Amino acid sequence: MNKGTFFLMVWAVLAGQTAQAAFELTEQGPRATGMGGAGTALAGDGWAVCRNPALAVDLLPTAAVAWSQQFGLPELTRESFMAGLELRTQPLAIAASTLGSEVYRENEVALIAARKLGERVAAGVEARADNLAIEGYSSATVFALTAGLSVRPTAGVSFGVVWRNLNEPKLPGYRDRISESLTIGVAARVVEQGMLAADVVQEKHFAAEYRIGAEARVMPRLFLRVGVRAEPVRPSAGFQIDLGRCSFLYAGDLHPDLGASHEFGLSFRFGR
Image 1 (spheres, rainbow, N blue to C red):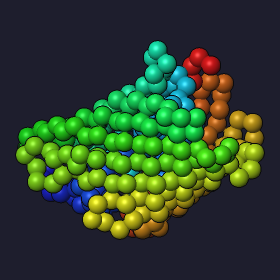
Image 2 (image 1 turned 120 degrees about the vertical axis):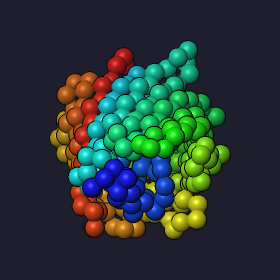
Image 3 (image 1 turned 90 degrees about the vertical axis):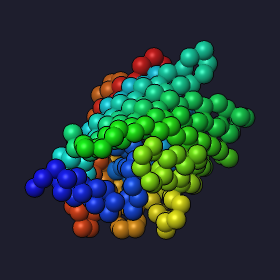
């Protein structure tokens, strides 16, 4: 198989997975992956700021790394990193990831900031640079903006709204734009040690995707998670083991046609 044919095969898998083009496999973190991808209103882990920039207001000094592989294909491997801190009372986070191989690669770097607008409302923004490198083609970089809102009307209940790629950026030299999307989500603590989360994702020109998941703390250091997303229907599950200030996470989901995907993560909490 020559490299051109190989590239087309990988691109077809990406398109089949997302019904979109480049930069549509967004980083959600192992916690949300195990909960069916639902997490727009789900705070408490470092990757929350990648799902909704407004959730950076709750971010403790944190660093996290993640590794994932879609459908068992080395060509769809992603490595991700995030770090967050509070600088002079301003919550800030940086996130970076790379997806693909030497033939096709997506690189992303994002700066995230948030601010409280009131006791129960917060807003955030993500400024992101996306770089696409395809062997035999010119490399292209574009800047994208994402805005988020978080509302907590009562204790234990949160709502989130994210408008992703609101400037609908276009990669220089390529025909397609990076599609904008709107996500609305809710998270609720249903028992003292359990959470439910649900999202509705509407991408421009495509049918809505529904995501729902649950999380339970079954032991002092062990969390279990399950979830599902549609369409197509993809069940998921995961777990987290806390070891002091360090946590190990795993999540996996199952595509009915393409098979299983796996994600591993480590997170580190500092300070408080």
